[in-house]
Amino acid sequence: MMAYGGPNNLDEVEPYLRDVRGGRPVSPAAVEEMRDRYRLIGGSSPLLERTRAQAVALQTALDSSGSLPFRVYVGMRHWRPYIEEALADMARDGLRRAVGLVMAPHYSRLSVGAYYKRVDEANSPIALARIEHWHLLPGYLDALANRINHSLQGFPVEERSRVPILCTAHSLPRRIKEWHDAYPDQLHQTVEALNQRLGECTSLVAYQSAAMSPEPWLEPDVSDILDRLASVGHKNILIAPIGFIAEHVEILYDIDIAYQRQARSLGMHLERTEMLNTAPEMINSLADLVRGEATKAQWT
Image 1: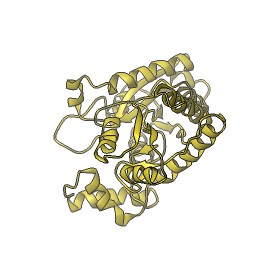
Image 2 (image 1 turned 90 degrees about the horizontal axis):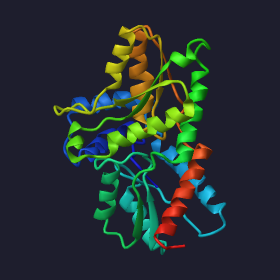
Image 3 (image 1 turned 180 degrees about the vertical axis):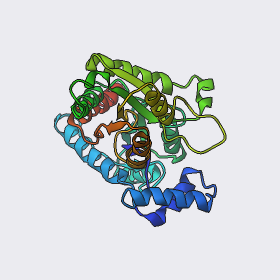
Image 4 (image 1 turned 120 degrees about the vertical axis):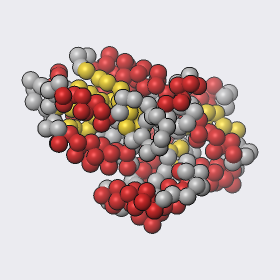
């Protein structure tokens, strides 16, 4: 099980950012800005704790099948325990076959592809069956729909059918479109499948958390959509972070602090759906997916 990673305390922010940047130095101003963000969300990233809880839940779901035995390991792309460390632990434990599962439903060469690049660079002796996307996994879609429906209850009854739902995912550089990258299409496919479950609603794909760089990033950006919706009279907004499975700085700061601040300045009421974390619908579906991948590899 692989996830992005994040600092466990404020002292780790600078080396973590260097890791994200491939070892390149980070300006003191950028480090201090990110420290401030982590300070505002409690001084650390909760992502490792959340991912380990997901691993325990997945282990339980896999054990319940009573068939092929599985053991779930956790590796992070940009912080400890690194993916390479998890693979080394697996090899020391005598394992020779594994299923790779990135806790990001939508494929991009720059996201999921980068996780498997780290796997390849580890030169592990373990044969790996790779799950590269699960954006239409039934349990994932059901869990999202349930959380959206629950969040809509926080709006006045007469307003619920008119509340725009911003289905957000991490922005990526716009150049991925030149590669015919699957990421934007898969996001829209997820939203289309959600709309079938939700019925009458207005769901939009929106990108968030673009890095500060001179190159253009995917649009529309959440900030721009908030401005646009306010300009045509919308007073209520729901953000559903469909590209994120657990809380980290992009949720706890970007949405819960920055976008909330913007919404208030525009006179709007913004709600966010609860994160999926260990949602049983999603975890049980992921267990089925892992078992199916092992079967496809002829390991069962």
